[in-house]
Image (cartoon, rainbow, N blue to C red; front, top):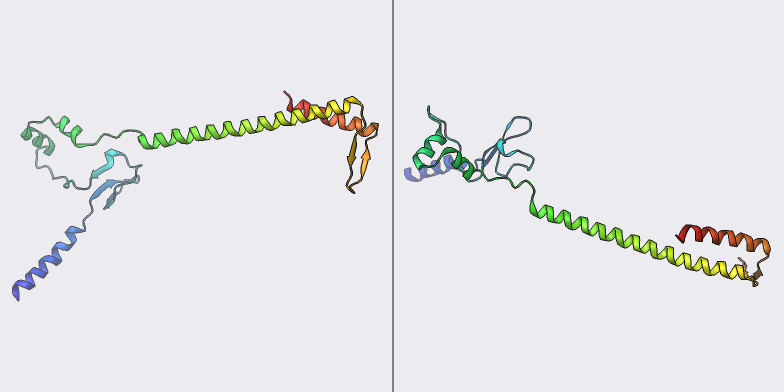
Length: 174
């Protein structure tokens, strides 16, 4: 019974150790942050004090601990630091590829839209030129009014229509 009691006490005491933070960094306000998740991307590399899976830094007892470890292992302290710290790539390659792809898609979309507008202008130009040649020929032209009746254009209506068609030609036929 006594053994079970001590085993239970030992488990209760060891429980908080498993819930300890794995990451430690200094935020933009200068406060230490402890978390089980990685810091946000805007935290500089130099402000990350402890990473997931790495032991906490040991207090130095008069001797610089990394220098002593490097001397013991036969590795220079600078080489050990550069090997331990991952170098930031600067720009994420996947993000760069996605950005280039999005820019290419936007450019293609813009070009398709410009081609569509150019085709519509060319069609309008062709129709306006046909209409102008019909009006310039002098033949009688009949239009259907709002009541559905045929009306033959008089000279004033013909001149107004010629001006309208000429403005379409001026804007679309360049």
